[in-house]
Image (cartoon, rainbow, N blue to C red; front, side, top):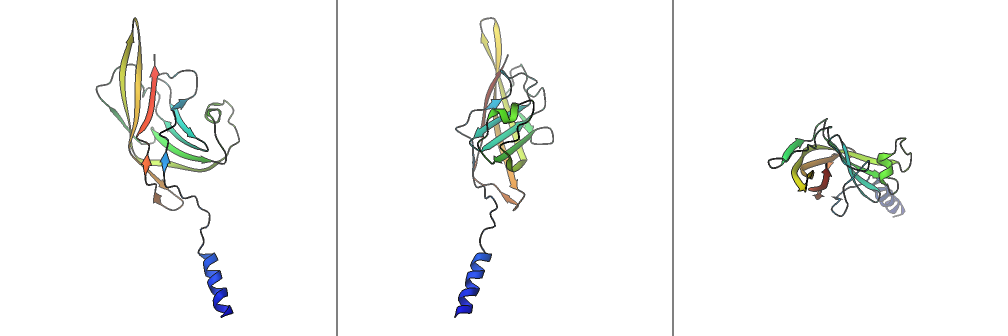
Length: 169
């Protein structure tokens, strides 16, 4: 009987989770879009959203944002030029992590998952105010696929359709 209990205890300990992160939801709905610098320009390439120790990072080629109204949504597929990454950090992260000229060393990245599919959709509208015109860029994500490389699981319950809106002059 002792041997059976010892065997069952060993089996239970062996079957325990090895501590891999299990990401089931990516939700940045309550987070505002952020960027480096005081304003967005047509050459801006980095946009991010932060929730505590998690970040969603969008990189687009320079010139993706155009100072001209679009005719509907313009689609940019996730590729080597347009990337979206989800990062989990060891502690809460701030804008300084992404914007400092000399990169900060803390917090550290615990896990990063690159999107493997989907599209970035941008709709640009002109906002005329007297003699000046600015351009509002609504950024949406569509069909984004994140696959956790440590266990080849697709992250389900993806809630990141509306990325945010930025304005250029």
